[in-house]
Length: 243
Image (cartoon, rainbow, N blue to C red; front, side):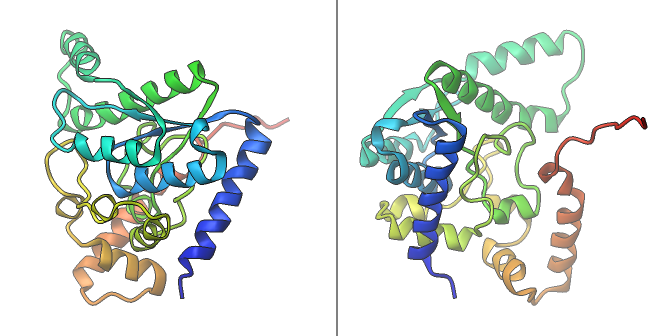
């Protein structure tokens, strides 16, 4: 049984301890998309540190159709926030790269999250901050993240919580339901997460927690994605010379 209240309280204490040990007096810097993960992480940080020590960073790429959800979150929590439009940066880098090479489709897709993470670290280093990672266990399990993009950060409150569990914690935190239940989209290719994955988060969460799954093809797909993407969760391999 998942005790959302206990897990929420434990996570708040964990965040407090992290900042005591890794940045006493520092601020939490959170990239705000308007989805459940960034909303829950920001709310947890507010409860742990106080709203004056949490900075939200909204990073649209040109026009973002659902940016009102991000504004709803920062206004609900009452936190300081910045709006940094990354379109010019991305287009400038693409133009420079295109003079030397043809960017692959995957490079195009992964460039914005890596620019966003660079933005978050620029904000963090300018405002005495630590960058929050907002990935959850379900996404990490199948590698649904960009290495050194949204998969990066200094501390990760949700990395051992499934999508369903994150939603329960969002409800306990009193977040607006429209944020907690918002259909997850990657904001990159116009598709929902589940469209890209080829299965639902409900199927994935059940499989992670119980090992049970009804569809053999889906099981094979999840297992394959998990195995291929484990490197994203591991430290960079380093050569160790024999002495």
